[in-house]
Amino acid sequence: MVRLVEVEVVQGRNEVGGTCIRLRDRDVTILFDQGLRFPAFKRLYGFRVRPRGPLELRSVGVLPPYEVVEGAEALYVTHFHMDHLGLLGDLPDELEIRVPSIASLELLEEWYRDSPDWTSYILPRYSARLREVEPLLRDRNNVVALPVPHSAYPSTSYLYFGSDETLLYTGDLRLWFLTDAVEKICPYSLFSYLEDNPDLKVDKLVIEGTNLGRPVTPITGNELRFTLRAMLSLKAPLLIAVHRLELDLLLAVLEELWSYGRAAVIASDKLLDVVVLWFTKAGFQLTGLLRSPSLADKPSRVELASPDDLRDPSSFAVIADLYELVDFARIAGGEIELKGGFALLLTSEHEAEEGVEESVAIGWLRRLGIQPYRLRVSGHYYAHELRRLLELIRPEGIIPVHTEAPDLLLDLARRFRT
Image 1 (tube, one colour):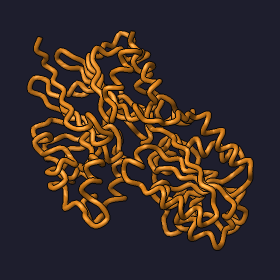
Image 2 (cartoon, one colour; image 1 turned 60 degrees about the vertical axis):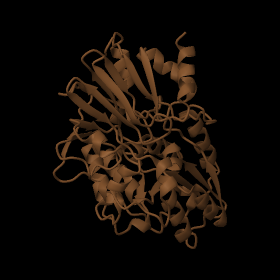
Image 3 (tube, one colour; image 1 turned 90 degrees about the horizontal axis):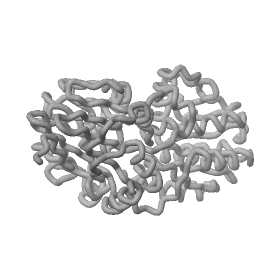
Image 4 (cartoon, one colour; image 1 turned 90 degrees about the vertical axis):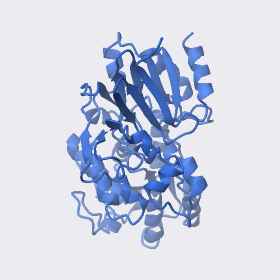
Protein backbone atom coordinates (compact mmCIF):
# COMPACT_ATOMS: atom_id res chain seq x y z
CA MET A 1 0.00 0.00 0.00
CA VAL A 2 1.41 3.40 -1.00
CA ARG A 3 1.37 5.90 1.84
CA LEU A 4 0.66 9.55 1.14
CA VAL A 5 2.63 10.71 4.18
CA GLU A 6 6.36 10.28 3.54
CA VAL A 7 8.84 10.76 6.39
CA GLU A 8 12.55 11.27 5.73
CA VAL A 9 15.18 11.48 8.47
CA VAL A 10 17.54 13.96 6.85
CA GLN A 11 19.83 14.10 9.90
CA GLY A 12 19.95 12.45 13.30
CA ARG A 13 19.35 8.79 12.50
CA ASN A 14 22.55 7.35 14.01
CA GLU A 15 23.92 10.23 16.02
CA VAL A 16 22.97 12.61 18.78
CA GLY A 17 22.24 16.11 17.53
CA GLY A 18 21.62 17.79 14.23
CA THR A 19 18.12 16.39 13.92
CA CYS A 20 16.13 17.25 10.81
CA ILE A 21 12.90 15.51 9.78
CA ARG A 22 11.33 16.15 6.37
CA LEU A 23 7.66 15.29 5.92
CA ARG A 24 5.80 15.24 2.60
CA ASP A 25 2.06 14.79 2.29
CA ARG A 26 0.61 15.19 -1.20
CA ASP A 27 1.85 18.63 -2.30
CA VAL A 28 2.84 19.87 1.20
CA THR A 29 6.37 19.65 2.64
CA ILE A 30 7.25 20.65 6.18
CA LEU A 31 10.40 20.33 8.30
CA PHE A 32 10.83 19.54 11.96
CA ASP A 33 14.11 21.05 13.22
CA GLN A 34 17.25 21.61 11.14
CA GLY A 35 19.96 21.37 13.74
CA LEU A 36 23.70 21.62 13.69
CA ARG A 37 25.52 18.26 13.73
CA PHE A 38 28.11 18.74 16.47
CA PRO A 39 30.00 15.48 15.79
CA ALA A 40 30.61 16.65 12.20
CA PHE A 41 31.33 20.19 13.42
CA LYS A 42 34.04 18.99 15.79
CA ARG A 43 35.69 16.88 13.09
CA LEU A 44 36.13 19.89 10.81
CA TYR A 45 36.43 22.91 13.08
CA GLY A 46 38.34 23.92 16.17
CA PHE A 47 40.06 26.83 17.88
CA ARG A 48 41.96 27.93 14.76
CA VAL A 49 39.78 26.59 11.95
CA ARG A 50 36.43 28.34 12.04
CA PRO A 51 33.39 28.03 9.75
CA ARG A 52 33.35 30.53 6.89
CA GLY A 53 29.57 30.80 7.06
CA PRO A 54 26.29 28.91 6.61
CA LEU A 55 26.98 28.03 2.97
CA GLU A 56 30.08 26.09 3.97
CA LEU A 57 28.34 24.50 6.97
CA ARG A 58 25.60 23.19 4.69
CA SER A 59 28.01 22.06 1.98
CA VAL A 60 30.07 19.94 4.41
CA GLY A 61 27.06 18.32 6.05
CA VAL A 62 27.09 20.14 9.39
CA LEU A 63 23.67 21.59 8.52
CA PRO A 64 20.99 20.18 6.17
CA PRO A 65 21.63 21.09 2.52
CA TYR A 66 19.71 23.94 0.96
CA GLU A 67 17.71 21.61 -1.29
CA VAL A 68 16.11 20.14 1.86
CA VAL A 69 14.80 23.48 3.11
CA GLU A 70 14.00 24.99 -0.27
CA GLY A 71 10.47 24.21 -1.33
CA ALA A 72 9.24 23.50 2.19
CA GLU A 73 6.22 25.43 3.46
CA ALA A 74 7.25 25.60 7.11
CA LEU A 75 10.00 24.77 9.58
CA TYR A 76 8.89 23.78 13.10
CA VAL A 77 11.58 24.26 15.76
CA THR A 78 11.21 22.18 18.93
CA HIS A 79 13.58 24.19 21.18
CA PHE A 80 16.56 26.53 21.15
CA HIS A 81 19.51 24.17 21.52
CA MET A 82 21.75 24.58 18.52
CA ASP A 83 21.53 20.90 17.55
CA HIS A 84 17.85 21.49 16.79
CA LEU A 85 17.67 25.20 16.00
CA GLY A 86 20.56 25.38 13.56
CA LEU A 87 20.87 28.66 11.65
CA LEU A 88 17.72 30.60 10.85
CA GLY A 89 19.42 33.53 9.16
CA ASP A 90 20.09 31.89 5.80
CA LEU A 91 16.69 30.29 5.17
CA PRO A 92 14.47 31.24 2.21
CA ASP A 93 12.13 34.15 2.93
CA GLU A 94 9.11 32.14 1.77
CA LEU A 95 9.76 29.47 4.43
CA GLU A 96 7.59 30.04 7.48
CA ILE A 97 9.52 29.54 10.72
CA ARG A 98 7.49 28.41 13.71
CA VAL A 99 9.10 28.49 17.16
CA PRO A 100 7.98 27.74 20.75
CA SER A 101 8.55 31.32 21.90
CA ILE A 102 9.16 34.64 20.14
CA ALA A 103 10.28 36.16 23.45
CA SER A 104 13.01 33.52 23.85
CA LEU A 105 14.12 34.09 20.27
CA GLU A 106 14.36 37.81 21.00
CA LEU A 107 16.75 36.98 23.84
CA LEU A 108 18.90 35.06 21.37
CA GLU A 109 18.82 38.11 19.13
CA GLU A 110 20.07 40.24 22.00
CA TRP A 111 22.86 37.78 22.80
CA TYR A 112 24.08 37.23 19.24
CA ARG A 113 23.23 40.55 17.58
CA ASP A 114 26.86 41.73 17.49
CA SER A 115 28.43 38.33 16.85
CA PRO A 116 31.37 38.68 14.39
CA ASP A 117 31.25 35.13 13.05
CA TRP A 118 28.88 32.45 11.73
CA THR A 119 26.82 32.53 14.95
CA SER A 120 25.28 35.80 13.74
CA TYR A 121 23.26 33.60 11.35
CA ILE A 122 21.47 31.96 14.29
CA LEU A 123 18.97 34.79 14.10
CA PRO A 124 16.30 34.97 11.40
CA ARG A 125 16.42 37.82 8.88
CA TYR A 126 14.06 40.75 9.30
CA SER A 127 12.21 39.53 6.23
CA ALA A 128 11.64 36.06 7.69
CA ARG A 129 8.08 34.80 8.16
CA LEU A 130 8.33 34.11 11.88
CA ARG A 131 5.43 32.73 13.93
CA GLU A 132 5.01 31.50 17.49
CA VAL A 133 3.22 28.17 17.76
CA GLU A 134 -0.03 28.04 19.70
CA PRO A 135 -0.04 24.94 21.91
CA LEU A 136 -2.95 22.50 21.52
CA LEU A 137 -4.33 24.21 18.40
CA ARG A 138 -4.15 22.59 14.97
CA ASP A 139 -2.62 25.08 12.53
CA ARG A 140 -3.18 25.42 8.79
CA ASN A 141 -0.54 22.72 8.17
CA ASN A 142 -2.44 20.29 10.44
CA VAL A 143 0.30 20.48 13.08
CA VAL A 144 -0.42 20.63 16.82
CA ALA A 145 2.30 21.91 19.16
CA LEU A 146 2.48 20.09 22.50
CA PRO A 147 4.87 21.39 25.22
CA VAL A 148 7.31 18.93 26.79
CA PRO A 149 9.81 19.19 29.67
CA HIS A 150 13.45 19.31 28.55
CA SER A 151 16.73 20.99 29.50
CA ALA A 152 15.70 24.01 27.44
CA TYR A 153 12.60 26.04 28.22
CA PRO A 154 10.29 26.18 26.38
CA SER A 155 10.37 22.92 24.40
CA THR A 156 7.74 21.50 22.11
CA SER A 157 6.80 18.25 20.42
CA TYR A 158 4.72 18.23 17.25
CA LEU A 159 1.74 16.09 16.24
CA TYR A 160 0.91 16.00 12.54
CA PHE A 161 -2.50 14.88 11.27
CA GLY A 162 -1.85 13.75 7.71
CA SER A 163 -3.90 12.50 4.79
CA ASP A 164 -3.59 8.86 5.81
CA GLU A 165 -1.27 8.82 8.83
CA THR A 166 -0.72 10.66 12.09
CA LEU A 167 2.87 11.38 13.09
CA LEU A 168 4.27 12.45 16.44
CA TYR A 169 7.75 13.97 16.58
CA THR A 170 8.79 14.19 20.21
CA GLY A 171 11.80 16.44 19.86
CA ASP A 172 13.92 16.10 23.02
CA LEU A 173 12.12 15.42 26.27
CA ARG A 174 12.27 14.07 29.78
CA LEU A 175 9.35 12.56 31.64
CA TRP A 176 9.44 14.43 34.91
CA PHE A 177 9.26 17.99 36.13
CA LEU A 178 11.86 19.02 38.68
CA THR A 179 9.48 21.33 40.46
CA ASP A 180 5.79 22.08 40.74
CA ALA A 181 6.53 25.71 39.88
CA VAL A 182 7.15 24.78 36.26
CA GLU A 183 3.55 23.61 35.98
CA LYS A 184 2.54 27.26 36.37
CA ILE A 185 4.53 28.03 33.23
CA CYS A 186 3.78 24.79 31.42
CA PRO A 187 0.38 23.69 32.78
CA TYR A 188 -0.45 21.38 29.89
CA SER A 189 2.00 19.07 28.15
CA LEU A 190 2.24 16.24 25.66
CA PHE A 191 1.53 13.78 28.45
CA SER A 192 -1.61 15.65 29.52
CA TYR A 193 -2.79 15.66 25.92
CA LEU A 194 -2.22 11.93 25.49
CA GLU A 195 -4.01 11.13 28.74
CA ASP A 196 -6.95 13.33 27.75
CA ASN A 197 -7.12 11.77 24.26
CA PRO A 198 -6.84 8.01 24.87
CA ASP A 199 -8.33 7.20 21.46
CA LEU A 200 -5.63 9.11 19.58
CA LYS A 201 -3.98 6.83 17.02
CA VAL A 202 -0.33 7.55 16.24
CA ASP A 203 0.83 5.75 13.12
CA LYS A 204 4.45 6.88 13.24
CA LEU A 205 6.41 7.92 16.29
CA VAL A 206 9.66 9.78 15.56
CA ILE A 207 11.33 9.63 18.94
CA GLU A 208 14.67 10.71 20.35
CA GLY A 209 16.78 8.18 22.25
CA THR A 210 19.72 10.15 23.60
CA ASN A 211 20.25 8.06 26.72
CA LEU A 212 19.80 4.73 24.98
CA GLY A 213 23.02 2.71 25.14
CA ARG A 214 24.71 5.18 27.49
CA PRO A 215 25.63 4.27 31.10
CA VAL A 216 23.84 7.32 32.48
CA THR A 217 22.77 7.10 36.12
CA PRO A 218 19.08 7.97 36.40
CA ILE A 219 18.80 11.17 38.42
CA THR A 220 15.40 12.59 39.26
CA GLY A 221 14.21 15.54 41.30
CA ASN A 222 14.42 13.58 44.56
CA GLU A 223 18.12 12.79 44.13
CA LEU A 224 18.82 16.37 43.13
CA ARG A 225 17.06 17.74 46.21
CA PHE A 226 18.91 15.27 48.49
CA THR A 227 22.28 16.41 47.14
CA LEU A 228 21.39 20.09 47.38
CA ARG A 229 20.21 19.72 50.96
CA ALA A 230 23.38 17.87 51.91
CA MET A 231 25.48 20.74 50.56
CA LEU A 232 23.32 23.45 52.11
CA SER A 233 23.38 21.83 55.54
CA LEU A 234 27.18 22.25 55.64
CA LYS A 235 26.80 26.06 55.61
CA ALA A 236 29.86 26.27 53.38
CA PRO A 237 30.35 28.48 50.31
CA LEU A 238 28.31 27.06 47.44
CA LEU A 239 28.57 27.65 43.69
CA ILE A 240 26.05 26.10 41.31
CA ALA A 241 26.44 25.77 37.54
CA VAL A 242 23.13 25.81 35.65
CA HIS A 243 22.73 26.27 31.91
CA ARG A 244 20.83 29.44 31.08
CA LEU A 245 17.93 27.61 29.37
CA GLU A 246 17.28 25.09 32.16
CA LEU A 247 14.40 26.94 33.77
CA ASP A 248 12.85 24.04 35.70
CA LEU A 249 16.26 23.05 37.07
CA LEU A 250 16.88 26.62 38.17
CA LEU A 251 13.49 26.77 39.91
CA ALA A 252 14.23 23.54 41.78
CA VAL A 253 17.56 24.96 42.95
CA LEU A 254 15.98 28.23 44.06
CA GLU A 255 13.30 26.45 46.08
CA GLU A 256 15.97 24.62 48.07
CA LEU A 257 18.15 27.71 48.56
CA TRP A 258 15.26 29.76 49.86
CA SER A 259 14.09 26.98 52.19
CA TYR A 260 17.54 27.19 53.85
CA GLY A 261 17.41 30.98 54.03
CA ARG A 262 20.07 31.53 51.36
CA ALA A 263 19.89 34.24 48.75
CA ALA A 264 20.61 33.35 45.12
CA VAL A 265 23.30 35.50 43.49
CA ILE A 266 22.99 35.31 39.70
CA ALA A 267 26.42 35.73 38.10
CA SER A 268 25.48 35.09 34.46
CA ASP A 269 23.99 37.85 32.34
CA LYS A 270 22.16 35.46 30.03
CA LEU A 271 20.78 33.43 32.91
CA LEU A 272 19.60 36.70 34.45
CA ASP A 273 17.79 37.56 31.20
CA VAL A 274 15.99 34.21 31.25
CA VAL A 275 15.03 34.58 34.90
CA VAL A 276 13.54 38.03 34.44
CA LEU A 277 11.67 37.03 31.27
CA TRP A 278 9.97 33.91 32.56
CA PHE A 279 9.51 35.03 36.17
CA THR A 280 7.70 38.07 34.83
CA LYS A 281 5.51 35.99 32.49
CA ALA A 282 4.64 33.54 35.26
CA GLY A 283 4.03 36.22 37.89
CA PHE A 284 6.85 34.94 40.13
CA GLN A 285 8.46 37.33 42.61
CA LEU A 286 12.08 38.36 42.12
CA THR A 287 12.68 38.62 45.86
CA GLY A 288 15.39 36.29 47.11
CA LEU A 289 17.41 36.99 43.97
CA LEU A 290 20.47 39.23 43.67
CA ARG A 291 22.70 39.96 40.73
CA SER A 292 26.44 39.63 41.09
CA PRO A 293 28.68 42.73 41.30
CA SER A 294 30.08 41.52 37.95
CA LEU A 295 26.69 42.48 36.48
CA ALA A 296 26.63 45.96 38.02
CA ASP A 297 26.50 47.60 34.59
CA LYS A 298 23.59 45.45 33.41
CA PRO A 299 20.21 47.13 33.99
CA SER A 300 17.83 44.68 35.62
CA ARG A 301 14.84 44.44 37.92
CA VAL A 302 16.96 42.11 40.07
CA GLU A 303 18.67 43.96 42.90
CA LEU A 304 22.46 44.31 42.83
CA ALA A 305 24.28 42.43 45.60
CA SER A 306 26.03 44.73 48.06
CA PRO A 307 29.27 43.99 49.99
CA ASP A 308 27.13 43.28 53.06
CA ASP A 309 25.11 40.70 51.11
CA LEU A 310 28.33 38.86 50.23
CA ARG A 311 30.12 39.14 53.56
CA ASP A 312 29.00 35.72 54.79
CA PRO A 313 29.36 33.04 52.06
CA SER A 314 27.05 30.70 53.99
CA SER A 315 24.16 33.15 53.51
CA PHE A 316 24.06 32.92 49.72
CA ALA A 317 24.85 30.67 46.77
CA VAL A 318 26.17 31.78 43.39
CA ILE A 319 24.38 30.49 40.27
CA ALA A 320 25.72 30.91 36.74
CA ASP A 321 26.63 29.18 33.52
CA LEU A 322 29.69 27.00 34.03
CA TYR A 323 32.30 29.39 32.62
CA GLU A 324 30.84 32.46 34.28
CA LEU A 325 30.76 30.55 37.56
CA VAL A 326 34.49 29.98 37.22
CA ASP A 327 35.02 33.64 36.30
CA PHE A 328 33.13 34.68 39.43
CA ALA A 329 35.31 32.43 41.59
CA ARG A 330 38.53 33.68 39.97
CA ILE A 331 37.61 37.34 40.47
CA ALA A 332 35.88 37.11 43.83
CA GLY A 333 38.38 34.74 45.43
CA GLY A 334 40.39 37.63 46.81
CA GLU A 335 37.39 39.30 48.45
CA ILE A 336 35.07 36.43 49.35
CA GLU A 337 36.37 33.39 51.21
CA LEU A 338 35.49 30.55 48.85
CA LYS A 339 38.19 28.06 49.84
CA GLY A 340 36.74 24.98 51.42
CA GLY A 341 33.51 25.51 49.53
CA PHE A 342 31.64 23.34 47.04
CA ALA A 343 30.58 23.64 43.43
CA LEU A 344 27.63 21.67 42.08
CA LEU A 345 27.91 21.29 38.31
CA LEU A 346 24.34 20.55 37.25
CA THR A 347 25.16 19.84 33.63
CA SER A 348 23.06 17.98 31.08
CA GLU A 349 24.00 16.23 27.86
CA HIS A 350 23.83 19.13 25.43
CA GLU A 351 26.72 20.90 27.13
CA ALA A 352 29.04 17.96 26.46
CA GLU A 353 27.63 17.63 22.95
CA GLU A 354 28.37 21.28 22.22
CA GLY A 355 31.98 20.95 23.37
CA VAL A 356 31.88 22.61 26.78
CA GLU A 357 35.33 22.14 28.33
CA GLU A 358 34.22 20.98 31.73
CA SER A 359 37.71 19.74 32.60
CA VAL A 360 39.06 23.29 32.34
CA ALA A 361 36.40 24.56 34.73
CA ILE A 362 37.10 21.74 37.20
CA GLY A 363 40.82 22.52 37.05
CA TRP A 364 40.17 26.12 38.07
CA LEU A 365 37.80 25.16 40.86
CA ARG A 366 40.39 22.82 42.34
CA ARG A 367 43.05 25.51 42.06
CA LEU A 368 40.80 27.88 44.00
CA GLY A 369 40.23 25.35 46.77
CA ILE A 370 36.66 24.50 45.80
CA GLN A 371 35.43 20.91 45.72
CA PRO A 372 33.47 20.22 42.50
CA TYR A 373 30.64 17.71 42.22
CA ARG A 374 29.17 16.88 38.85
CA LEU A 375 25.54 15.84 38.92
CA ARG A 376 24.32 14.94 35.45
CA VAL A 377 20.70 16.07 35.38
CA SER A 378 19.53 14.58 32.12
CA GLY A 379 17.35 16.55 29.75
CA HIS A 380 16.17 13.28 28.21
CA TYR A 381 14.12 10.29 29.32
CA TYR A 382 15.96 7.15 30.43
CA ALA A 383 15.83 3.78 28.68
CA HIS A 384 13.55 2.17 31.27
CA GLU A 385 11.09 5.05 30.85
CA LEU A 386 10.52 4.20 27.19
CA ARG A 387 7.82 1.80 28.32
CA ARG A 388 5.85 4.65 29.90
CA LEU A 389 5.98 6.60 26.63
CA LEU A 390 4.85 3.65 24.55
CA GLU A 391 1.96 2.97 26.92
CA LEU A 392 0.77 6.52 26.37
CA ILE A 393 1.33 6.72 22.63
CA ARG A 394 0.84 3.13 21.36
CA PRO A 395 2.39 3.84 17.92
CA GLU A 396 2.19 1.46 14.98
CA GLY A 397 5.70 2.31 13.80
CA ILE A 398 8.75 3.82 15.50
CA ILE A 399 11.54 5.85 13.89
CA PRO A 400 14.50 6.42 16.27
CA VAL A 401 16.44 9.69 15.96
CA HIS A 402 18.91 11.66 18.08
CA THR A 403 20.57 8.47 19.30
CA GLU A 404 23.70 6.42 18.71
CA ALA A 405 21.79 3.21 19.49
CA PRO A 406 18.69 3.14 17.26
CA ASP A 407 18.63 -0.69 17.15
CA LEU A 408 18.66 -0.87 20.95
CA LEU A 409 15.73 1.53 21.08
CA LEU A 410 13.76 -0.68 18.70
CA ASP A 411 14.71 -3.84 20.62
CA LEU A 412 13.53 -2.30 23.88
CA ALA A 413 10.36 -1.07 22.21
CA ARG A 414 9.56 -4.57 20.97
CA ARG A 415 10.05 -6.00 24.45
CA PHE A 416 7.98 -3.30 26.16
CA ARG A 417 5.12 -3.74 23.71
CA THR A 418 4.79 -7.51 24.23
